[in-house]
Amino acid sequence: SDWRLEVTLRDRTTREALYVGGTALKERRTGAAAGAKPAGALPGGTVVFVQPYLERGNQHTLPRAGEVNRPLELFAAPGEYEPATFSVRSDRDLKAVVVTLIGDLRGPAGSAIPTGAVTIRTVERMKRWLTPVEFELVECFLPRTGPRDLPANQTQRYWLTAHVPPDARPGLYEGRVRIAPASGKPHVLPLRLQVAPIRLAPPEGMNYFMYF
Image 1: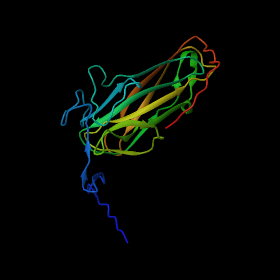
Image 2: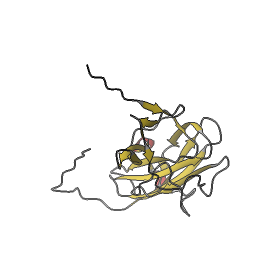
Image 3: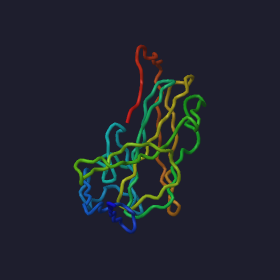
């Protein structure tokens, strides 16, 4: 009978596949140069930065000027879903990092947007194959966020979505996002949501679908 043997060699620590069938796998890096350090790091070598959600990144992404330690700012109409993203990077391993919203968003005249109207998810990456042996990692999936280990010198992005209640009072709503590793001081990121005094008409004659 015929036999076929496939060999996979993995990194002992990360379990990442390095060789498959004797072929070396190579990542094409996009973003920061190897060994680059982000500016504006917090005590302990951690940096939190905000970038537009329409702008893709990866584990090599570093902040640009003006993106470090700035608040998350959103603008939406009543009934609308609005996203924003922020990223965490450290020069040391961060264990069991938990990201949560601290209480409701407080607005004008005692009004509030409840905590349950805001979701926070991690941004996961997948391999996009460029050649039979070369790939790049691209952001793709948004699983729900739980405690997560963040490796040193890798950027992890988080995706926040706010659903403005249909009866929300127009004005500025403010809250805070807490980024807390199992050990070490947590970081608090201000969140500002401006609710516009308008109503969006439902789209007509449009269908929405997803494919993969």
